[in-house]
Image (cartoon, rainbow, N blue to C red; front, side, top):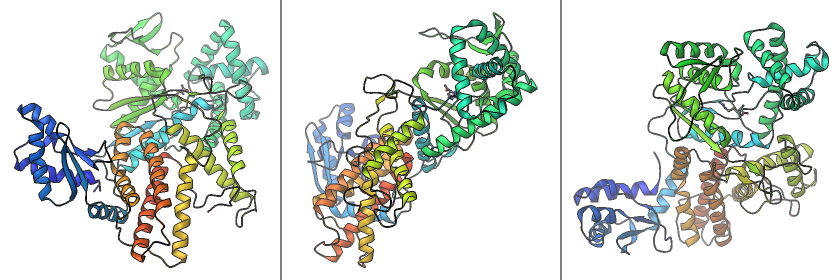
Length: 583
Ligand code: ARG
């Protein structure tokens, strides 16, 4: 059940439309564009009039007259060319808010037909330090994963570790070049491993012979060479440890830690299927699948390279087959930056030709880059790549400046302050990312992102903690929540805003767009703040009013917490501030 006010009105409208013999398709309202005039508006009369060649105001008035009889509106008017404007009675809104407060899902419904979704995000690579470029995929993917689960879909998230391509041959080749063999591999820590990879990268950029060597080693590794496999496994395990630590800090979670290498056996199957279907061919020694060229040239998918190695495209196609056969995915969604758009177009088309994922929805959600103030990809102060650990440390440093010192506040020793610092710093990083629509890139706002005011994660965490504090005080004073009554305009506005939550979550789900939730959450925190300043709770004029306001506050707190959860952000019970020692 969802407790969207619009649904209630839509049901009434549908009845009226039926009675008046009007097309029920147009029997719906939306939140008003003119909140000064109305809460909701129905534009159906305009569409109906167009079809019937009638005057829209006339049809509007006919509908409005029927609505009048239903006794749930304070005012109904037909305005402009035929918009029907509705202002609900306060009791109707209050009743709905009461029901939301009593509902364990806070009025949010679920999808009608739940299905299995596999989400592919993260995508870090063995031996490469995770940097700011890896931030968005993990942060957006985690949020979408929580949203999808919440609306009732079954989700499996998979990191798809980059552990099988040429970079593997490059690093092994570099170690052999420097050490003479692979004997010392298992003594290297992650810092040394990434250093080898950096050097390998530089060498391969300049030197064709080095590239050739790396290619040969990659093919041998994939072919099963025992020494290469042993060394590779160590490098993979060490990298995975570092990657897991990074994701743990960010509170980004995965059900599966599959890598490209796990698709190796299925890659062979794909090659066989392509041959059997007659859709592959040999081109310059490589085995490829040609694709349709529509308005722009689309290069073929290279399944097997001329040296026998499997590439990024084939491992991805094989992984689709595994996700369909083993995980029973009905939908697979990928989150990467927009530079991989061609890759996904290619593999989706090849998958279609292969017929390995019939009726499975494949979607690539691409995002823009995280930029510095100069509009170029975000770098450290000395111009280096901003790695994730540095970014998190930087954010924590900012947050520390706003928090009291350990033991300055009773109960907050070093460990508690550190935990709070971490929760706020991650909220700051994630919210700054998620408040932007996915497709757009954004400038990493160095000065303001961790502030307790403005459109930031900490601002919303602060709003939650503030309500927690009021509720604690109320409890201590023996005050309880009671039925909601709406008298002050600030109460009414708050209750109307709360009533949107189902719609917000559903839109975020349909569009796979967490920014819709981020935007709403910030708006709700602001509306609450206005209510908080205008409507005293503990010292309300009557006990009934105090009880109603406490209930509104509690519902707001619960919805804010749920929204933060869906964004992948924690909501600490208490927030502290350096100046006033918190609430
Ligand atoms: N490892 C890849 C990279 O760093 C991203 C993987 C994205 N997921 C996928 N199934 N291709 O570019």
